Image 1 (tube, one colour):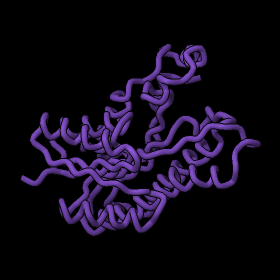
Image 2 (cartoon, helix red, strand yellow; image 1 turned 180 degrees about the vertical axis):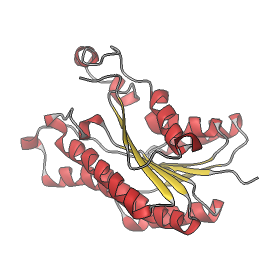
Image 3 (cartoon, one colour; image 1 turned 90 degrees about the vertical axis):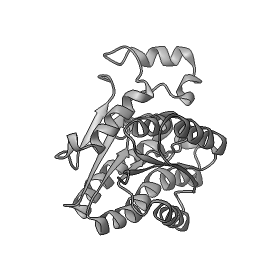
Image 4 (tube, rainbow, N blue to C red; image 1 turned 180 degrees about the horizontal axis):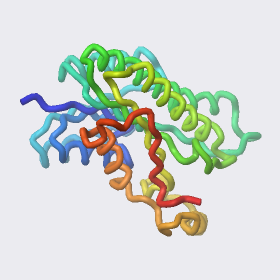
Length: 245
């Protein structure tokens, strides 16, 4: 029986890697997209192939560049012939205040996070329409809803835009493809753990559960949305933030 195939952008580490592990446990073939984290991507590939009876493909691409996205999707189809699930997880964050942020820095974040999500949805979505089946889950953020930070307005704007794209692609790809978004709050990824401990303690106090999410807790919701158990969930945004206030 042919396995389902999931393409996960930004899958080499953090939330993306946890999503890959979760899908692998459900017997999906995995495409690990990365840009700079080649070592981590191939280490994850080895881990998954040694643990599960699945095929894993690593693909490097700058998702802000249309030709690279087109080439990535073509390579995945050449390897597997179909794409059943797309997880748009890749994101760039360059925190600094607006008066210290150049226009090119702002554009780089938005072009990667929002533009990249558009391009992958476009080219994978076209394939899913041909298949007349598929699921897309976009990773947004509570920063795109109501917990914005003034030093990351480009990131916040991109994550808000991803919610809008989710609604638009759900309408554009209906009725064959379900498109939803997950909006995580604080999550204990490598990048977060390295931040100022005092600041992190203050932020934990804003969460009703008094802790940050584990990456696998985000992955659990993502995989649920891609599953048949969520077959009637469409054009929705699911907050996974522990009750962030």
